[in-house]
Image 1 (spheres, rainbow, N blue to C red):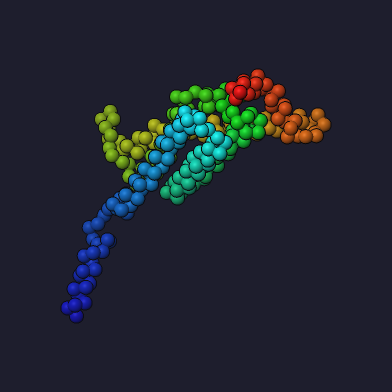
Image 2 (cartoon, rainbow, N blue to C red):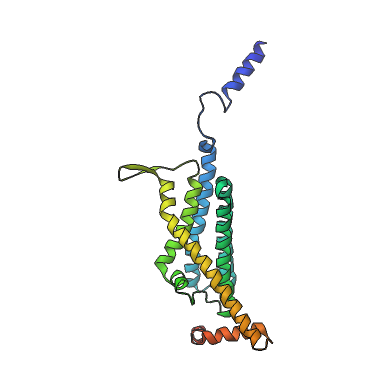
Length: 243
């Protein structure tokens, strides 16, 4: 009996649910370490996203494979994080699903259209808004990295507002602050992706309609010639640069 009583006392003393332990499970030290490690990996991933493109251009090692790999890794990271956020914030599960879908579809429409009709030059845009997004370096940085910071701040801020930052006499959690500051850039970028998707699909449908009304034939070749005709001077400059 004495031995059994000692074992019961020992089990109670080592129980994580013993009386007096009011720490939230999300704030357990091992869970914090795992979450911070995941956040660090995501941060390093999108930080290197800017470096690899510049390095490829500097070394003259640009390729369609590298461009596609870069897009796939970036979109896979965003999609995976959106799925995690959907489980952390189940009330907003539809919002995160739409976020990842529109982000992926918008990016895909840009590079698909550029690959088929514009000699892989995705920076040549007809819409004024997408021209700013793809050709203005500083606004593009705010949109792209604001999007990443927004998602990452929501992930880190779940159950933990982060280190406090004094602002105008108020103590604000760092993760909450970053989420609020980056939200306008993330949301506006998503709107740009939506505009881009509709614009690319509309132009593709319009060219398809014109091709059909002119007798069909080699539709793909005809679409390419039409697009080259719309942007002839630009395509000539691209070929001149290649030579």
